[in-house]
Amino acid sequence: MINLNWYPVWRRNFLVWKKLAIPSLLGNLADPMLYMLGLGYGLGGLLQAVDGVPYLNFLAAGTLAYSVMNSATFETLYSAFSRMHVQKTWEAILNTPLTLKDVLLGELAWATSKSLLSAAAIMLVIWALGLYADFGMTLALLPVALLTGFCFAGMGLAINAVSPNYDFFLYYFTLAITPMILLGGVFYPPSALPVWLADIAAWLPLTHAIELARPLVLGRIPSDILLHGLALIGYGLVGFSAALVLTQRRLLK
Amino acid sequence: MTSPLILRGLCKSYGGARVVDGLDLELEPGRCHGLLGPNGAGKTTTLRLALGLIGADAGTVDLLGYPMPEQAALARRKVGVVPQIDSLDPDFTVRENLLTYGRYFGMKGREIEARIPYLLEFSGLAGKADAPINNLSGGMKRRLTLARALVNDPDLIFLDEPTTGLDPQARHLIWQGLRRLIGQGKTLLLTTHFMDEAERLCDVISVLDQGRVIVRGSPRELIRQHIEPHVVEIFGDGLNEWKTCAISDPAAQRLSTLSSPAGGGGAGGEGFCRRCETAGETLFCYTDTPEIVVAELEAQPGLRYLHRPANLEDVFLKLTGRDLRD
Image (tube, rainbow over all chains, first blue to last red; front, side, top):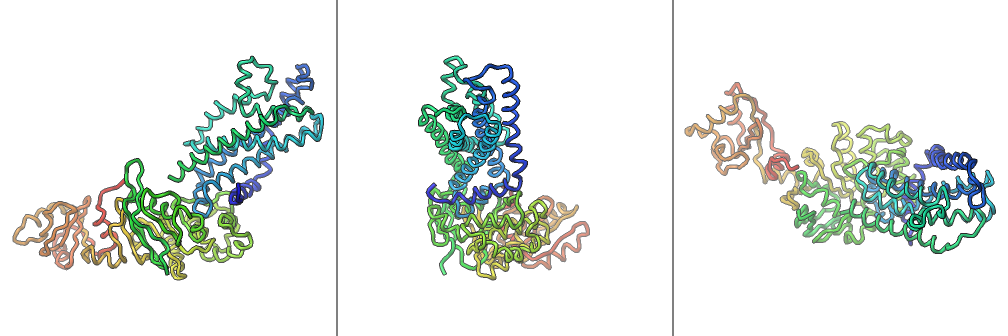
């Protein structure tokens, strides 16, 4: 990202989003909010404190990470695929001085931006309902969301590059996203899993994101910050590099 | 002035198939160039190579003085492209499409805004600035695509089948625009399947087949060099009987070269036609002396005919054959 050539691509997506900002925001928010409030109050009423806090407080960080993941994933799968494959927006851009790398960087930055917005919306709810222990620490959720958004945007662009149609994304959801939601620690602490399963779950990108986000909501400094941060960056970089090569092969051969 | 685009010995293969095979092309500045060829002849690949979107297996591309694809970003600052497939932004209005596209060239918002009235006037879309794309007709969309390609005031404009799918009114509007651009000294490189379009607009035509340029010249030169000046198209119920009779009557030698296989031209100059071709139910007679053929046909009540001057399409079909390519 030495130059800012990608910025017009980001700006194009922003301008389109601006036109539909309200329904888009509501759509982004409604799903995680329903999970958080429905499960938080509903299940939370049946549960003892989890990790020493009410279940709703426990669920907040998981919801934030899950929402960031979803936001970046949907943007780089369905929306980016529409621009690349259906509307031929990328091909139009490639006829200008911009390169495919600029296009993909713009998409990466845009998807990350959108996931930050999702994080901010969940943070507002966390603040409004007082689900946090230390306000200052909750601000550190933003850089966590940035890394998480980057991670899933990079991976999503790689999936987008090899997808023949919209239906293909279902594989990614079934094989990657849903397992992460169920095993990554959104709904319960990883310690609740049998050791062998917890060992597998520890490798999932979403687990790393939640390992960073949850302590921050509960008022503790996360442990192994460097490990989790580098894991998110690593997954994102591998995904984005693959996206560069695979999209090049798809569009410019 | 130097040539805005020079292609030398260009080769590009896909999976063992040579799509572009030793292609040479040099554009003259300020002229409209046509790139004609049947489907699969390598037109679109040639355009993509010229734009530096893909790299050649062999050969060189020089676009506005820059080697491709290494310096593609620099060269494309002064290039406009009208792609074959509509790629306008459906979420934007006409103005927003132009603004957004201009920004890809690094232009400032104010700079683009200042150019928009001209672009709208040029494309006959004045008053449509705030119209959503989905409210535009097919012709309007094509004109907007042309306007979009001009946002950066390019020296060289690539047009890939700019009028495919348009009604005659819309085609004529596009042609007017292209003539204006030629008048402004822009260089155009146009691919089309409409031979009348190429004949009307192009100063120089290159016919591509199997990845290389097989002939090059002005439309008039090509017609003069490659084909007889007149064509009589003959069709109707009695065609086969008449044809057989005409061939088997040695005294008359009426259709002297008809006995050669369809599509193969005869060298003989005597008889009605220098060359005949059968395509489906129609017989094409290429001749210098249409009067004799017409007089003979007037005596055949079962046959209908169309006598017309030879055109670029006749040249194209002669050079690339009548077989379907895809």
